[in-house]
Length: 160
Image (cartoon, rainbow, N blue to C red; front, side, top):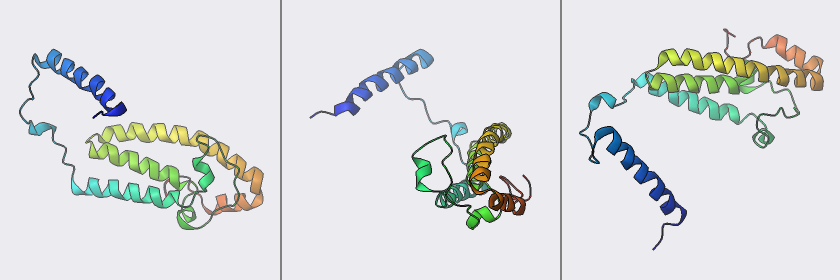
């Protein structure tokens, strides 16, 4: 009775954890439970996290399946989508990703980290949005410009 590849991995992982435990604590025995390490976020953090996940999946349903095949490359667009969440923001998938990251930070009780995460996301997504919007203008011209003028916000409705 063999464990295959998983068994090989366990032989690598479990001894290393035992060596770390021996080095840190001087023995191999588990410590008593310490409640200060329990993570029990408030219900509104949990709700925000669930909303972020659901919105992200809802938004992903509007993108083309070909976008999953070529990561980090701009796919030639086939239509200007103007329904669903694209009525309020031009890049709702990026917005939902930022919402998800912020909810992770809040769930981990690191609200200041969420500011850093949002700043990094904005810097990254701004570069990506420039490429995508240039491709959209090149492909659809005036039709996309009308859409961009109608939907003023890139990521967050009524904010940015």
